[in-house]
Amino acid sequence: MSENRESHKAGSKDSVKATGAAHSSSSAGPVGTAALAGSSCASGAQPGCKGGMAQPGGAGFMDELQHGVSREAQPLLTFLTDNYKKILVGIGAVLVIVAGYGAYEYSSRSAIVSARTELGEILVNRDGQARLEALEAFAAKAPVAVRTSALFELARLSLEAGAYDRAGAAWDSLVATATGDAVFIARMGRAQTLVAAGKAEEAFAAMEAAEAAAPESFKNIALLQLAVVAEQVGRLDRAIAAYESLMTQGTDGDKEMFAHKIADLKARKG
Image (cartoon, rainbow, N blue to C red; front, top):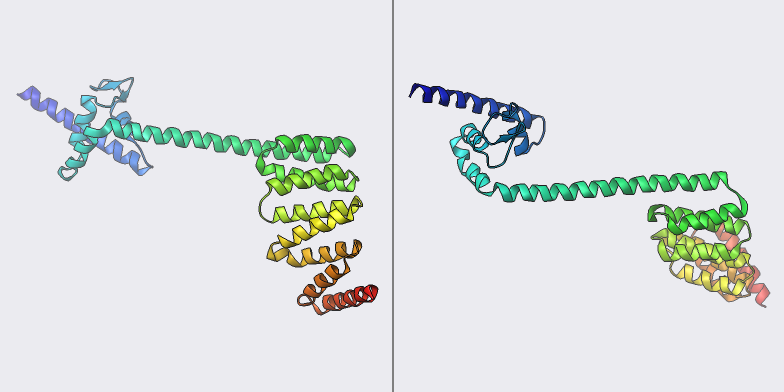
């Protein structure tokens, strides 16, 4: 009997130590059952311990929990004890998913940083035809987050170099893959490229499509460009209509210029 009492006292002391360690760990941040187990199995000598860590289901681990909780918490402990395998599996699955997602996010961010560095090197270290070819090859394999920038650079530099077919292809790719205002800007660029290539009629059709789909914030720019292209192809009525729409907006100076253009176009019509 005396030995039993001494054993019980020793067990109680151990449970208090385990509970205190768990409380201390929880104050530093969220911990799971493994952290609690680790605090009571440092020596590896407790029942249910292996290699200094408690094994789920071990008698020592559950006994210490039983000693360390209040009477009011017993129903919760019973639930946890009865369902710990399901709970651990659930937590494990979530942790695997989170870890996998985190690795993917890190990998994606790393790929984007690497791609941006590569794009910068192409723009700085190459020129002429070699730069256009490198940009074209890069845009074909670049991550989506970087591809739009690469295509804009390819279109702009190709237009400046007089490589109108390559510029047009880049604009078309942007129209097909970009989002938001970038789509409208690409449509405008496509029309500008057709004008530069001497394809005025195609440019007018492209500009009409761009103006019809223009976001409100770009409406005036689209109307002005449409008026210019319409005048170039001899669509004077369409140019006049565009300038008249612009007359309702803008500054007094703008309106004076638009009024002058309208009067000039009407005089040319006869």
